[in-house]
Image (tube, rainbow, N blue to C red; front, side, top):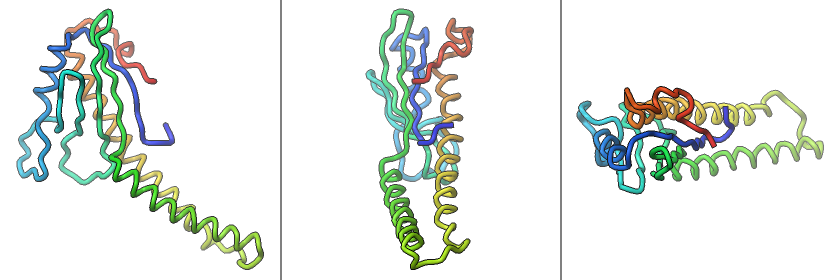
Length: 175
C-alpha cells in the first residue's frame, strides 16, 4: 500500500477515441450539488475529447473520495488512457493544516522532554495515536474508493469481448 493517497496508472484498450468517449459519456452525468434520487449514472463530472474529470456518485459521506482525471492518447494498437486519482485540494489543505498542528504539538512536547521541563508520561503518546488514526482514516477512505473506481473504469473501457479484455492484467499499467 502506498503512503500517500495518490494513484496513477494507464489503461490500454482496443477502443477508438470515439467509442471510449461515448462509453464514458453514457456513464457520466453533470455534477449536482444536491442529489435526491437514487436513479443516476455511475459517475458525475465532465468528459471531453481530450479526457475526463469525474468522481463516483455515492450515497454516503466520504471526504476522501478520489477525483479521477484521465487523458486519452492514441496508441499504436488502440487507445491509451492515463488515469490519475487524487484527493480534493481542499481536503489536502485541511489535512496539512490539521496534521501540521499535531506535528507542532509533538515538537513542543519533544523539546520539553529533551530540556527536562516535562517528564515522560503515556499521555504524551496521544498525538502519535492521532497521527496514526488520521492516516488510517484518509488511507481507508481513499483506497477503498480508488479500488472500486478502478474496477468500474476497467469495465467501461474494456468491454466484454474486446481483445484487450482477454489479456487480463496486461491492460492496466501502474506508473
